[in-house]
Image 1 (cartoon, rainbow, N blue to C red):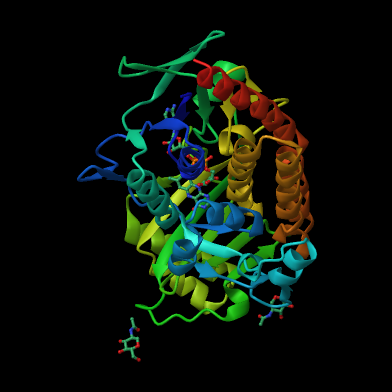
Image 2 (cartoon, rainbow, N blue to C red):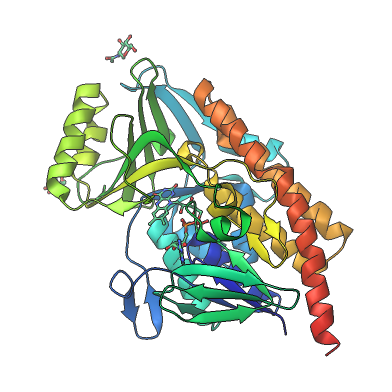
Length: 411
Ligand SMILES: Cc1cc2nc3c(=O)[nH]c(=O)nc-3n(C[C@H](O)[C@H](O)[C@H](O)COP(=O)(O)OP(=O)(O)OC[C@H]3O[C@@H](n4cnc5c(N)ncnc54)[C@H](O)[C@@H]3O)c2cc1C
Ligand SMILES: *[C@@H]1O[C@H](CO)[C@@H](O)[C@H](O)[C@H]1NC(C)=O
Ligand SMILES: *[C@@H]1O[C@H](CO)[C@@H](O)[C@H](O)[C@H]1NC(C)=O
């Protein structure tokens, strides 16, 4: 039986583990989070709640369906048919129906035509529980130090001095991936864009806030003053408000961190939104947030390949991108879907299926619905990031996985 090490048990790492499990390949997840951040609940591990909301488009939903988790995600998240774009004060709203573009892009399953928003922490929880249910092990306090590989195996060393050896290593360790730096080149580091994001999460029910259907995924822009704001309803009860600013200093090497002084920070950001002249309920959302995360926004240079021998990069480690487009996770889930399709069928049919999956997902990107140039620019950058490179690499991976399985079977 081939064995796989997955470094990073974020959304994409956990989904990858489930995909491997589905095709009968044994894998173990390793993550740097320490036991203080992670809550130990018997044998199951719950990671601390942080971050805001993630959006999942048709291609990503298809992957969740394959993993058997779609219904639970829909139940705990918020399907939203529309995306809207306005000026910062809510005027001149443009509303796009995401279902139409997904249908046009070839998605035939009605359940998958409506994009889904869900709290990142909720989705992570669903994935980690699913891993636990099927017996996938997650080892925490394992910060990657080094990787060595030869023709037979790959060995990873962790900062705590322990090591692990397997047939294949998947680097799912996010935008600051140590796997990428160790194996693909020290120079391949994410660059700070100068942008800082603050995401507040609020219980809208408790605060009597209702969000109109068209505003459940809404973007507000003042290009002249470089102001950007987005609202995402994440469930029946919760919503996230994301504010971008461009004058904060970089917080070294941390994509998302909870802010410590919550009421004060919520007040400061709400006052800022007031000054911007945003609709009242948005200011109220920020003021009443029960958690706020701050993120220095990074972008990653394109890589020529996502695979080096026995090491494959996946998710943000491979194609981390500025998150405005909201398709980072989609792309990561599609990596998982592509891997899975290939592992399941190992033929041209699978390759074509995988190709369609990706083309569909990318074509359905909401970004092309708006008339906002800088979004489109970033969407195009993302397309480029996520395009053929991944596919070619994954085709190599197909051969690699097939070869591994064959080797093992003949033993
Ligand atoms: C705490 C957090 C909050 C986020 N919140 C949002 C949000 O609100 N909205 C949004 O759109 N996106 C958010 N993101 C980003 C989003 O989750 C990713 O873009 C997307 O899901 C891709 O996921 P990934 O699994 O590739 O990477 P990530 O989700 O970044 O996961 C990477 C994992 O690798 C682990 N890791 C990193 N370095 C090492 C190392 N050296 N050794 C071992 N393990 C390592 C990390 O602890 C982490 O668990 C957040 C990410 C994080 C980590
Ligand atoms: C919103 O801002 C625009 C300018 O960007 C202005 O023309 C419009 O009157 C404003 N609307 C309201 C309701 O304040
Ligand atoms: C929300 O509305 C209910 C009923 O109208 C009211 O009792 C409650 O005090 C309100 N809560 C807040 C936080 O405004």
